[in-house]
Length: 236
Image (cartoon, rainbow, N blue to C red):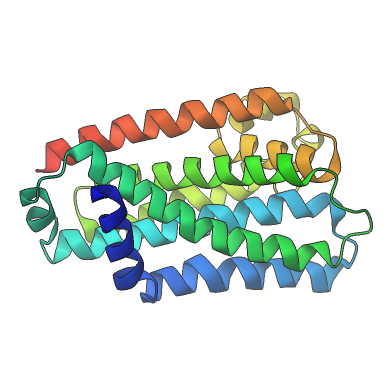
């Protein structure tokens, strides 16, 4: 009930914040429409576009809420309530996941109308979409708490997010890059999201098998969650 109460509060207070709307909703949808208008046949781009929507939707929402709470010092009020650090972090991750699922599902439904081939597996696509949003939400929470000055959070987020669009195979397959570039792709969290979604949507993957992608996203979600709890304890 404590986690649920925090989630409801977050959705009411931060759903319409400028950062959540501009970077979390408008940018992913406009980005997807730009590729649709440019290429028309976008089957090979769909996993990347959906993953980009999940990345920007989750991280924009959680960063907006944490930036406001840190600047207005309302985090202290939350910590005075009978909730643990872990419950606070879990609520932040889940609410970011909910927002990201909304944005990425809208993007998926949009791009499906422009695909030549039908969606291969609804269940695998839904699973990988959930894992992707959980991973990105946990990453966004950690970055938002790890930066000492909350004013700089969005700058650091973009320094992480924008390169990931090109090091993950979201725009161009990693198999097209030189061999030395592959390790960079394998340390990029978005790579596992893109390959997992690619398998669920198109029934093939580039460099990471579907089971490995799922396990990697579970591991990264847990890792970023633990790091976020540690960062929150250090701040307060």
